[in-house]
Length: 256
Image (cartoon, rainbow, N blue to C red; front, side, top):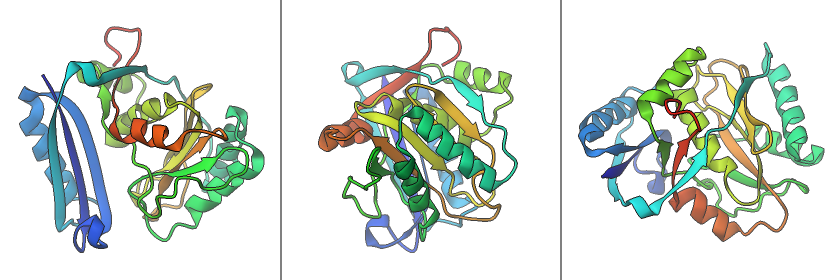
């Protein structure tokens, strides 16, 4: 039996009471791995570089096999950039290549640059007009309930490519779920952790494009934008992103 384990933490009270978001994490794991996962998440919340949380929420739910949908792991590549300015130009180019109109790509980038603090979820933007269409305010739409089929194999897959740490591990799994959503064209993201400056553009067409520098070191502002086709059913999209259990896999036995 599998279980979903989710953690979210804030400083200054719960998120719903105005607390500042510190960190979040989630896994889908067999029962024998629950204790370790919970302890790891607690440590992450209490020792995070964004600050020490005084509100920590942990939620554990049983996952039934019939609830699971399987999606493929996105292909992985890196854009060679050295500065945040170069990173932003590369991100816009990748978004346009994936099918986002130039003005929408620039608007999405501007939305992240103008955040006053990080959001718990993502901004959803029409890929042609650049208008925000989720109506979720500062909360945004949160991609949740996903993991990889074989955690050990996935870790080996990432390590063989010189990729270690929670940031990229979690981002590639999340991006793979997001890319599988009906109407999804592309995703733009960079981290809100002050000393992790890497971001990415992901799309169903071109996979996960890692961009090594997307902000200045020390900045605690980050977030993500989902670009969707005009006419996308928003309620269906939100239900998939927030409620559908998705396990990520590839055709290779030990990769995910």
